[in-house]
Image 1 (cartoon, one colour):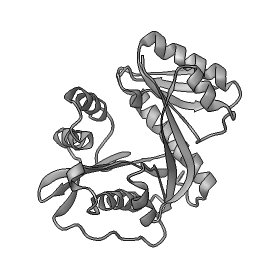
Image 2 (cartoon, helix red, strand yellow; image 1 turned 30 degrees about the horizontal axis):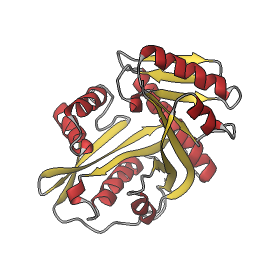
Image 3 (tube, rainbow, N blue to C red; image 1 turned 60 degrees about the horizontal axis):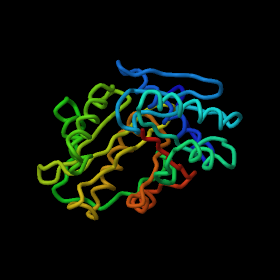
Image 4 (cartoon, rainbow, N blue to C red; image 1 turned 180 degrees about the horizontal axis):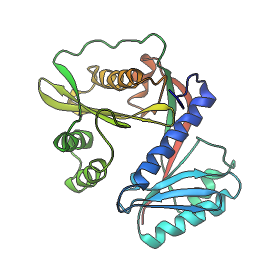
Length: 266
């Protein structure tokens, strides 16, 4: 398959994770109300959605980094729309964190970027009795996915996420393949795999709090990477939360970088 990343190490996995994030941002930029922007050495997307997750930078050069931060910050300040900025995926000046905070962005989190060779032997998790994992195939299932992902988040948050994800090219055979995990018939977990930029990016492996530490997250992750392998992909990438990193390590994922997220909110 043309464009598929066939061999990876820490360096190529980091570049692939960056490219995948840029591809997803470009997907957001194609939404009906979204706009894409380009300045000297920087590209960003503004969906207009009042959630920083859906607005941010696709690409930025190390040269002129401070000017780029100022340009993007000025754009979103004029719009009154929150945005995020990630570092650790591409060359940046050594004082990038200070530059971002000086422009009013708040450090949110640090998460290791990780990768997995999908052609190697799989480390199977233990079976979870009563768990079934189903692909999202209709808008009702998208709504269910968002509710489970939210783990009790306010309705205005889940409504915003549903508005975005229901408009993306989700579904079997598309680039965005979403899954809901059901325990004894009740929805308890989510994940999705985004097939773009030559790699499979696994995101939002979420289990409702009352069902955690039972192996459900590992099963959801495995469902996503198996979907990617069946589609011909050879490398999976993700960023790991503190609660998920142990699971990913046990499944064979290796660390390749540290992704720091900053956020600006009007």
